[in-house]
Length: 411
Picture 1 (cartoon, one colour):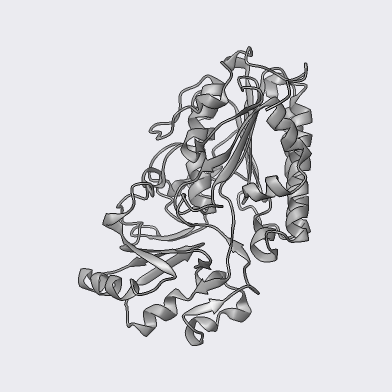
Picture 2: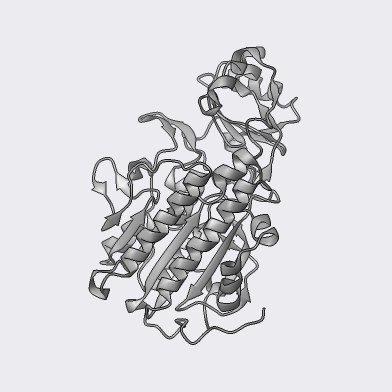
């Protein structure tokens, strides 16, 4: 790992009390993007900072559970966001909501920081707002961030980088000491255009440029630390599992919530659950797991938000609620086959168990308190929160499942 930091790079001697920490989260960054495409800013971060190409996400390896896991330092079994879509007995259906009131426990990074007197910004960040209490950080972005598509996502990310730079340009006594920022990244392009498509390459170039601009602004600030990460990787897919049609064909009565590569089935009758499990285990496209018999590394818990049965697709299969299918394909829910060739709809996805090659994320760290030129074998999504609070010199939220990723830190 060649290279030394430039004289302008803030180093470990900075007092945590005076540190400014910026976290940039880009949606859907696969290691293959950094390995196969030109990303000169990430080359700089490798020379001047510490990084891992194995950031272990939570299961299911999709956006909302992992964005909340990164922000809270808790596994889904504690924070309660167990998928992008699920049912709650009291509140009803959850569907991609950023409202912090859906949490069942734990504290978002900005909430823990503000509670301890650290002014924070949460721009497009999950949990930046509460339906009951309003904004939860001193500076917040849009309450409902629109999903960028194609060039629009690259432009939105450039505008988000502008917002970070404006915050950093404030006088020190008016500047947030913690800035949390969500970026669209390559997620949409990889999903709908393909992992090797020109639109995906454009999104990666835009990501690299956004990081370069924020990094340039941070170089002039004493005691600045930058963390760049993602919520999950990406895997090519070919076939969608038509879960509702399968249930109809077997006369299985269940409520269904599907997202990415996972489907939760909720039953009113235990006998019906067991009958369904026996029937569904005949499919090669997915595994069938009971809520009370999950693999240890899933960390979903056995609460009622988790389906009585969990269908976990195997690559290259995926699952998605029909409401998120293109409008022209929704009739296939009732009239199509159980398995649908879907390359015209989706070309890549994620959500598989965290040991599945390709779904792991990346994490880069640079600046005050960070080691120079060091590759780290692995960091877990739950470790981001306590590492950030450690860098700020404050306590982590309570409770927290992660630990400080000390391998990233300077001696």
